[in-house]
Image (cartoon, rainbow, N blue to C red; front, side, top):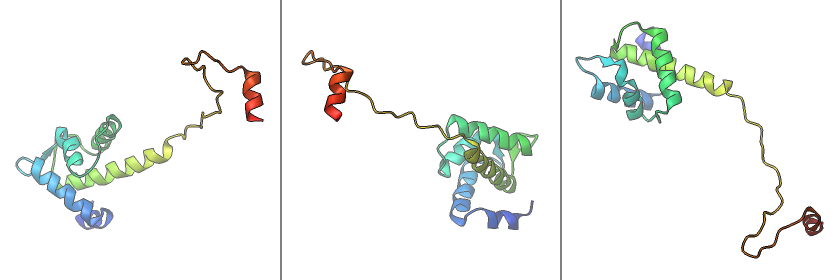
Length: 123
């Protein structure tokens, strides 16, 4: 993948944060795969368990070794971001389980609401 394409596909502000994170975490101009969660955290991602799984999936689909160069890091990020967007669209929306509930027993007064009394109140 060419660097020019990466420069166009990643927002310039985000690209700058990614490169700063890479330079802070890299040793000998290479970033170790174990440092990816920290690097993405530095770039602004909340690194949840789900994000860690996406990081692993994206990395494993691209690389067989444990370190990456700066260009490979940007390539990884582009793939990671595509997976993240794909997962967002795949998540089933949870149906609303909210229902109207009758008032609960009032422990302080010792009174409880019967269904009949409740129906009289709302009519």
